[in-house]
Image: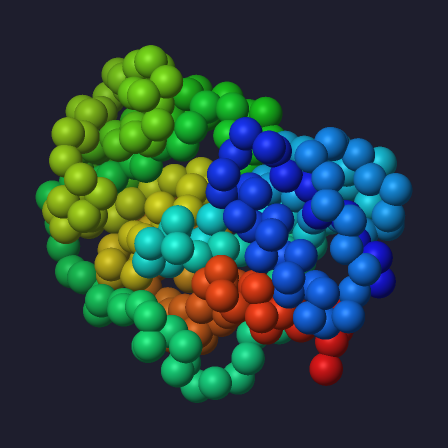
Length: 264
């Protein structure tokens, strides 16, 4: 297989991952082309994020989407999936290791009981995971309905990047959070989000969670209707999720790529 690896010359993290992927694919015996452009002549191509990935997919390419990981330090882990972002991507089958990889790197708290409020977790406006959807009307409607469904006040947590971008978000029926994510989860009876990766944090913290879009990485272990307090078995989900993100050394060695390209 010949694959083209695309990166922006102005983004250090993209350059680092392009280099790691090049090393990994070459270990597996594949031909690699590196470029800083936004087009490729090869059928297979890898790029950072779904904004460019979607354009390449529409042009007929098989697209390996590079993104941050889902658990632990997201900047230390990288997800790799074909032809989609997060839950919309195609991941290789997880290794049947009985949860050894998860336990080595991550932890999960028991499902909690009670809580003082419903926590709504916001996302960055314009993020590729939203596929052009403006969430403000959804936030407003959902916050009002959630207060009635759970009989609790609603706390809204805007994504930290919104403030840095100068975007102010305030809901009519919710108070804005001023705490850390850990502090907000500690007091929450249930969390709600559209398809944010913070749902993974919530589930791992033992907080029952509601997600609204199948693209959420925690979709399989969350509720989808307001009023639910979903507490499913999370073990297999957590074990599998540990195999959907990789350390850079695993990418460079080719280990992270074997399942993606059907390499034995």
